[in-house]
Image (cartoon, rainbow, N blue to C red):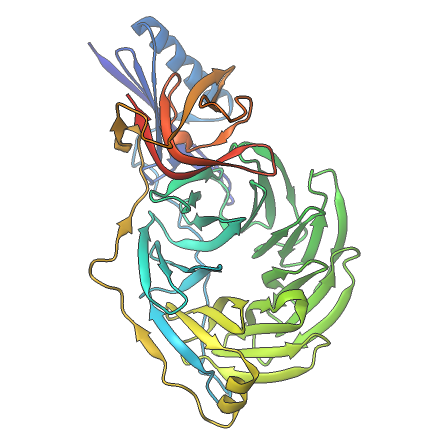
Length: 479
């Protein structure tokens, strides 16, 4: 039986779309591969009852893409566009004293991603590595993702990694999976997730909002480019870019306020009542979430790469391009400035009197930010930092890229939850068939392994406030 393949590309000038779409018909099987030109892309497979129906479905898919501007091309004829990687420099600190670093773990590549929760510390770097460590520095696990990690964000106790390949991976389970696939012409700079809704800030200064089913909701283009900040709560989406900070209504119905900041925004943080913008003009500015009014300014000595706060904004921390970290009182008074001893802090988080930073030299460092430790550091007395090593036997996890990579089981294990893939119009939806769950709720589930009629077993499902289920634990296919 003959096999036929149609390969299309859409490439626009000026940094627009640069993507491919390939359809292969092999008997009654239709395989669709799509993504950024030059990348392996995502693969979806669909079975049809006859060869004729498979060919008709393929022709329909090709026709839809041609009407959108795709044209026949030769694979490899166009080169991949380079992904924007944040270009940062790091100078030695001018502080007279070094911060009291308790322990340091080097990941071997510049690190932007950090998340600190009650049990673990997470760090993600530009090589696509994500490590989890205990609060004592013990390395617990490693996730190997296909491309550089731009940021790590949490939504309740789910952890997500936004990568340079345009995919957002859920790292909450043993096997990471692609939870969201951003449009191939969107160059991710930063992410935030709130109740399953993904908010993406990009190179062009755009903001894209995607729901828990990986379906586009709305987008906006702000007045500035290079949007390195996005934060979200129930009231608004706060978008920081080259022209300041803009707040939008969560449903995309309009702009709530816009504030021009002192310099382009390079990082953002939020508390209940305020958002914080670190800028290239050496300041962190605190803005009211209600009005956008600048409430306080925290002055540093170099470009601000990152910022964070103690709960409620009681203290404000900043990291600059000269390998220094700062602490300010809520009103803007500078309390201290110390060298990191590990490069410039590209992101940071405060928890339980500890300041955790990830740096230009790829380190995750835990700094004692208690008053006594800082006072000792200012007098030149600091502890000897423990250099943490990753054990040879550290478990390493990689995402399943195809349906065939998912383990097949013939029976539901004890406590397992069964979900099945059903077709609703042109969409493939996941529904729960195990008793005790609402069968009408959708399940956040990796798109690239969905097949109509297939059933899967997961370890557990958790109800989200947004009215859908999230997977916890391993995903297996029920044969």
